[in-house]
Length: 331
Ligand SMILES: NC(=O)C1=CN([C@@H]2O[C@H](COP(=O)(O)OP(=O)(O)OC[C@H]3O[C@@H](n4cnc5c(N)ncnc54)[C@H](O)[C@@H]3O)[C@@H](O)[C@H]2O)C=CC1
Ligand SMILES: O=C([O-])CC(=O)C(=O)O
Image 1 (tube, rainbow, N blue to C red):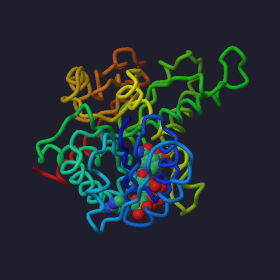
Image 2 (image 1 turned 90 degrees about the vertical axis):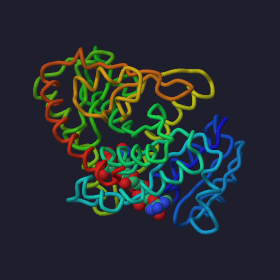
Image 3 (image 1 turned 180 degrees about the horizontal axis):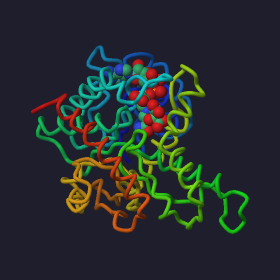
Image 4 (image 1 turned 30 degrees about the vertical axis):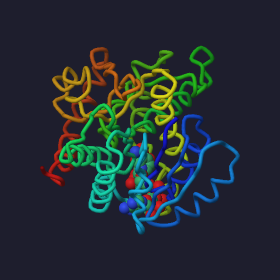
């Protein structure tokens, strides 16, 4: 069992994600850190009759140090969300500094923890996190993850919705596995529908519409919430799903393969993918083990020509986002 930290725990994602972690059998101790309201959220959750203490911390009185010390996993959904008309990159100005400061805390107080970055723009905040950890001499690329699971969840759900009604193709979202690679914003998101399991048969028009819906699923929620933020509940589910898979591997020896945005040169099998895509950071299926990334399980040799085109576009956008993150915290 491990101590888990949620940084940004009082927010729209942080609260339901903390609830799910309170139910997780691998979490012995839940530390909720935020600049506001975390003690209240912690007290509320502490009445739930699952084992494991819950404590809330604010920045004063060395709250970050108390929250982070001894953590085995730190999940970071801290920072501002989008409003209609904004891109994820528009969040960089504020969220870059928030992530940098939280990762400094990780480096000082729990350098061995798994670090799961949810805060947007993920394509840039993960490179920032890597830079801060590297500067502190504690960067372990096998333990740093940009959480892209919501793209995978959407790919499952939306694919099932398209094939629903076709008895041969199923229609139960939970039965689908669709790898999603690249980054986490618009056309840097590359769903690999040709590798869906079970296989799905789509017309060209269906494939294009489905790809677009997965790439811009975040915008769908931002528009529907109409100024009240972006995806929170589906993100809490996705963040928990990834954290749970990692803790199953770390605490119960049950490995699984999940896509995540990782530092390619630092993970086993990552160099070959870097040779193909040219970027240092990339979302790719990775096998999870007790120490984090065991190895990359790349599907890139098997993708369709249509997906090769998507990948080319994705790489162009991704490169700039990564460079922006690196430039923000130059060593
Ligand atoms: N990776 C992904 O797939 C997704 C990422 N996101 C991103 O997650 C982030 C959070 O979204 P929401 O929860 O909806 O926002 P929110 O505004 O509801 O919550 C953010 C929380 O972070 C806290 N916070 C701000 N500065 C902090 C600091 N320095 N230390 C600790 N906590 C701090 C705030 O007080 C607030 O409670 C956004 O950047 C959003 O774009 C959202 C959905 C999906
Ligand atoms: O769209 C946003 O800003 C939040 C997000 O990353 C998502 O829902 O995928």
